[in-house]
Length: 294
Image (tube, rainbow, N blue to C red):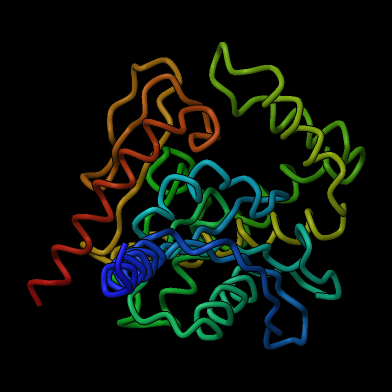
């Protein structure tokens, strides 16, 4: 083989490698950002492409609950997951675990990464956190997806006195015996026939969470609902979509923004990952299309 051909082949191979590298999903990278109250927030980012998808976990969970979503969506999007304060690998020095402070955790991560176009995906408690983060991030957020958190039929009274009484009664078993109460609470969220190993993993994680953090977060979440629903959802308008559970397949959507996943309980991303990913993919495409028309 003559030298010109060798040079040509080498150049072609090098170009192909660069192109493949540019198209390949970005390997996961972890980092830490400091929240407004100086608590360290751990995050992980993988993949590339806009809009960035920021996944916000639920009560007593962590960023690892999004593994199957990260694997799926990192092929076409930058995927960001974080541990809210008091959860996972993030700091635990916060005195009061409010939805507003959690929203600040998400905001800090988005700003640290310099994300310009974002879809926030909030799971259960993470839904209210995502709405709070969207308030702070403004036009950077092109969409918010709540997962079994809004328009589920569960309501907290708007009257603050009644809300406080409801929350006090709800939390009493957790205060008396947190491990057992949290385990029973979590088990009630699964659809009939859910994978026993999944049920055990999630109930065990909830029971081993820090009691003070868990009670503070739940108390503040209910308070946030009482003060902000439905006004905060109305303010988002077409930027809000919801993916809700339909364990026995007999429920009807309680709002036009809701898509139901049949055969799934509260933990939709874990119980029905393929169906969940497909539904979320459609919603992200709708947000992207709506943003492109502006």
